[in-house]
Image (cartoon, rainbow, N blue to C red):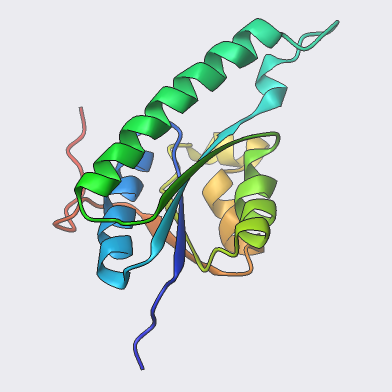
Length: 155
């Protein structure tokens, strides 16, 4: 029996890796006639100062995320995905992507770009993809290649 995904989530963060994941997620969603959930998580810890939460930076990040998600949504629909939803969340990307959003939105496949962290960075902060693989309750697909299954060229 063929696995048929109904609700696919892809995390978008503006990186080349997330762009590859988005393109493959569109393809998988179209092929499965699944709905596509485009997620951008704003890590609020990045905007905290010693004295207060910097709302101006958070608002700018939110505006940029909204614009980006609108463009991705339009692209997905142009490529034949009928149901596309976008969401911006605030907090820890690891926990939100691995647990909270998939539970709330009934996701059955999470697609993520491969981490861009080196070994030392992974040791100290850990990668989102590594955390999601370990803690998600649904299938997780880590995307490393383009639609032709080729590694992207290094710049």
